[in-house]
Amino acid sequence: MMKNYSLEIIDGLICSVICNITIFLGAAIGPIIGIYISGAVFGIYLLWRVIRYDSIKPFLVFLVSVALFTVIGFVLSLFIPVFYFLFTIFHSHCGEPNAGDGLGVLISLYFHADVCIAISIIGAIKIMIKNRIASKKQME
Image (cartoon, rainbow, N blue to C red; front, side, top):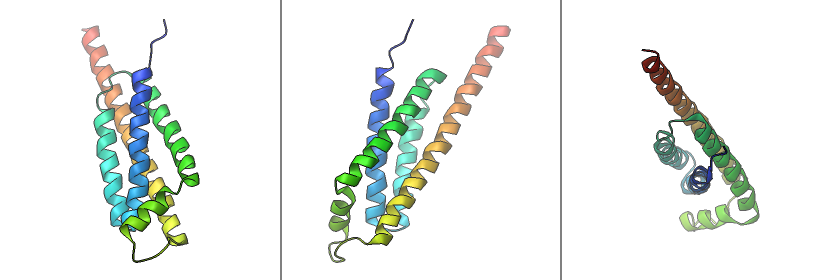
């Protein structure tokens, strides 16, 4: 029997929207501090979402949907000037963003990917430990 994973996919969509928002917001606020703060905010939110999973299949559906929707959102944001809009809000006195600011977006994207990978590993370890404890109790 096939289980419906629509809630996990919607949860992944919401998490990917927050990821894309924090990627561009962190890069638009400031070079390093904004990237770290936005990565920490996304990491805390993702950890809060990951901790609730007890089974590996919904967890994997969630992770795949987060990755897929984040990539789709990032590619779409290249055609819509999201970063330009946010940069002009925070740095109206500087004029237009330059190549260094675009590099800040890429650094923010890589940092968010590292945070996502680390929290995914934490979530997988949590599920494996819980399943191991449950199997030990079942054997007794």
